[in-house]
Image (cartoon, rainbow, N blue to C red; front, top):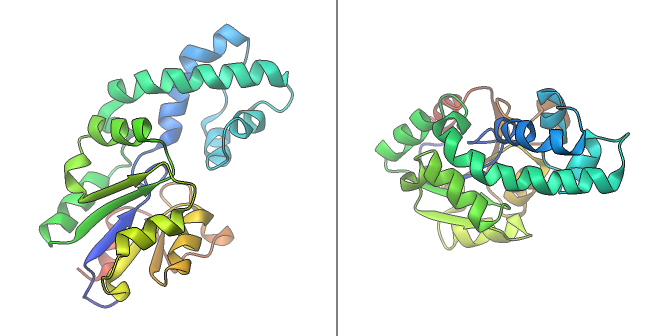
Length: 210
């Protein structure tokens, strides 16, 4: 990749923050009240990316759907409390150093997340990384539109999208920018179509050649 990169846009959950850690912590407090077993963390990671309540139906396919739905709502309430207590533990190892290195190089950093305002801002504040980002967009149904706004009139060849899901590389492709899949998160190289893949956050520096 050329050395004129000026903007890196990050997805949040599954790219910078490990949402499975948050879900597991919340499940410990919520599920016993509904008689549901703790899911395996690998099952949580596989279900990540599916909207609620489908996410919970995937985790508990053999249980009463009404019970699962109510339990899922309680898990989400517990997550709001767990975010603050987990703090920096939510970040994938190396993410903070990556953001520091990019910022030192004068790279403009942005967030494009489909999560709602409360979740996104709570995670960014609790992990202590909110100050790295110039622009933070969240809570919209169309990620391609979000990227379009973040790119604005700047040179597209200098913009990169880092994410872990299909919606991330599709949004990048729709805007004509490079996409990077975070395989240390939930991205699977053999079942996705990112332009590049990284297996640790700091590998992004090699790809960007900075």
